[in-house]
Image (cartoon, rainbow, N blue to C red; front, side, top):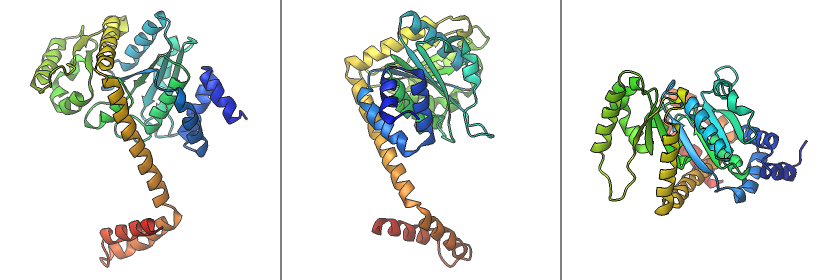
Length: 317
């Protein structure tokens, strides 16, 4: 068994086996994972984090693949976290993205890992951000989070990424209006993939209309719409240029620091809430809850009275 200090030192040396093992430990959520995350934090903050989201079949994996190859041509290293739906059989991640990305998986400067959403409504598990920290500490220049779905619940991608890309296809045109609130919140820019298909201009018009309706402050970043055919590597350069343009914008106005500060605040609050929740539901309170259920069903007491009793038990402790 690798010692804790040895594992952490190997992470700092960009050792892929150490990185992979550390992510597995973080996914298992044991006390060892907390120790690792505490130790590596001092080495984080250098990597630039990109989030790619959109409906299934939009071409997120293909664009991720093309971006990774683009950055490698610039001699930059890339870590990829492909966030998959949780498998109903094993609870683990489906490996479709890793199969599709096998072309780049053998590159020494690229690390790919599939992670399960584990029921996270936003399509991004809390452990994904922890895995991003491990890749950051390992010295990767870019970290790409590719995540499932899009909509109102997808807002948590913004907690992980410095730049968030929302991918759509021409067929998305009819559903853009329904998704607009979530899209407007998270998109730093849009990519209309498979733009050689019929209906692409209609989808672009729908997006432009939504963008025009949103009130903006002076000097606020305005999301653009980029057309791509990712399967043919058409538009990858423009996407990479837009990422860099957004990064420059954030750095110029010190917005990157502010954004990361806000994300850390949210993250710390979530960790505190998790610790409280874990302590709150220790065995004796779960048993007390179960004992109280019959009296709630019989109408002798209310759910609120039971909840207050359990909370006061925790508070008094």
